[in-house]
Length: 105
Image (tube, helix red, strand yellow):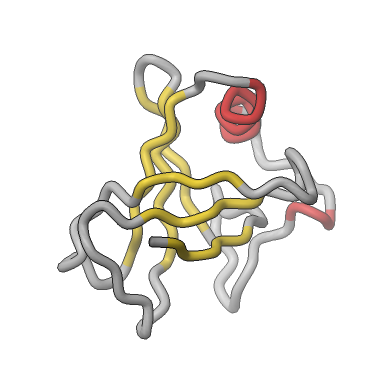
């Protein structure tokens, strides 16, 4: 689950709930998949939050290509009622949309 924040210069700030067992170091990255944009595409992004931040991971993604432009546009739209884009997890909340994360080093 993630909560987006749209910044200036078409940068999307994603806030992702951090699993308790997920450990990382500065410079690590994760792979991100947003099925509503491209079901089988995974894109690597550096983690911009500090490892000491226990509850969330931050990603800052600048719109520079087709996929990142679609990501920015996706989070600018009001949340659609489509069942494909229902919030994930036990809590429902505004701004939560379906996505998947994979870790890398």
